[in-house]
Structures are given as C-alpha cells and as structure tokens.
Image (cartoon, rainbow, N blue to C red; front, side, top):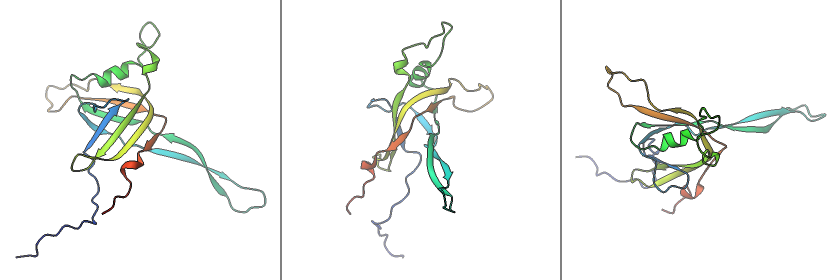
Length: 169
C-alpha cells in the first residue's frame, strides 16, 4: 500500500473558467443562465519617439483600447438581454425606443472558486449593447440549444484587488 495522501497547503491550483456570475448595473441578482463570457481584453498603442541627440528610440504609452465583451446564454424567458439591447434600437420614428439614460450600464463579472466564493472580480464601465442575436439559426434536424448573445462595447474595466490580496496561512 502506498503512502497516505497529504494535502499541500501551499499549492495554488488555477481557477476553473466555468464558474462565474455576471451582474448588470447595481443588481444583487446575477443575470440568468449566462453560459459564456468573452475575454476581457485591452491593448495600448506604443508611440515611438526620439529626443534630440539621443540615438535610442524610446517607446511611450499611447491610447488604450478596450475590446468588446461577448455574453452568451441559452434562450430563456428572462428578458435582460433583450431589454438592454432594445435601448439602442432605433425604431421607425427615428428615436431610440426608450430613454438613452438606460443605454449604458456598469457590469460586474465574478470568477468563483470550487466552493462558489468570488475570487476575482472585474467591473466593466459604461457598457452598451452594439450587437444582439435574439434567435440563432433554427434547424429542425439539429440537436442544439437556442443561444442568444450580446456584444458589449465598454469604456474600460478594472479588477477589484480586494479579493486577490494575499491571505495569511
């Protein structure tokens, strides 16, 4: 018989990408059935410059661009995606269907550990829906779930560092 199993308390396993919650605005309830969140990504443009008499080309920080975030979920009776997407829809009357005050929202994305506790949290600022797929291709011969998705443009994000502070062992 082998040695008894011992737990290494100093081991840190990577978090699983399938345990997460998404919140719209200041809601305390997560959005129903979100099954996929696209990558949270930003890129900054490098700016090359050279000062007089200096033979070295320096690289400075330019503009930062935040990529859109895709959210997907199985089609349900919950109308959160459709309601938000409809704020940007221009109807025949030539004006948005509701007040533009509702167009932009803050969203929160929580990554959970195995015990269901948030361990990483991101706040995404001034999001609005630039693309909405209300219904996928329908095929009577297929065996698939109906998926709806929204594409969220945003003006930046930040990580809540209070969740990732080192803990005493």
